[in-house]
Image 1 (cartoon, rainbow, N blue to C red):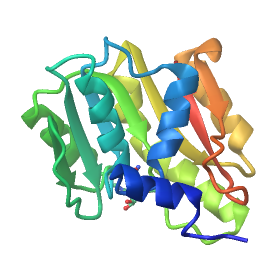
Image 2: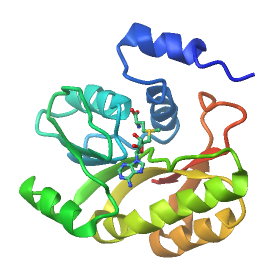
Image 3: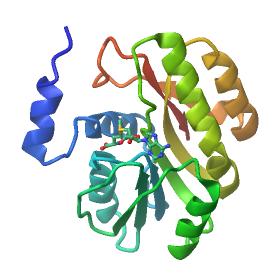
Image 4: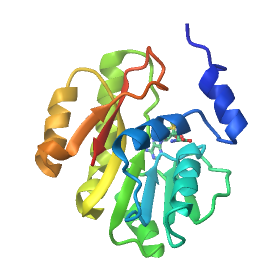
Length: 198
Ligand SMILES: C[S@@+](CC[C@H](N)C(=O)[O-])C[C@H]1O[C@@H](n2cnc3c(N)ncnc32)[C@H](O)[C@@H]1O
């Protein structure tokens, strides 16, 4: 039974995170070690309320002082995080995104983190299709702005078409570089899964 006030909710509260999602990124980091000392420029797609940026900033602070995080969401983001700027921005608007990245002097990105989710309705076919459509709209950022050695983590929903979509990412980024992972902190009943470029 879905309980919004579960163990991870309490843990997030205790550790000062805006959302329990922080622990999904923590599990991904513990397994894949994506955020290493080479990561300087981070873009967070669908960043509200901000727990992934909190986690990433906490971690990068220990590695280097000159890191930069820029986050985008269609909702307001009311949080202050070191070395982090946020914008209320629909990430499917390519021109506006390009302009904001330019303003932040971002030509190439070391790490893209996206926990973006469409409005899910609980019907797996529709939720999966909507999540592919949303990623499709942002894929240009991954394909053109990620450094060749750059990394990403992006959320998708399992459903019809998932394997084809994964193949597409593997084709572009190299089969051995693309992994999938479902953190334990994801709700059991959730169809979400994370696709990772190492
Ligand atoms: C699960 S939340 C992200 C949680 C975040 N990672 C955190 O740790 O706080 C998904 C977010 O994606 C955002 N989103 C959905 N569609 C978007 C779009 N087209 N452009 C920007 N953000 C979008 C939603 O507004 C929502 O805040």
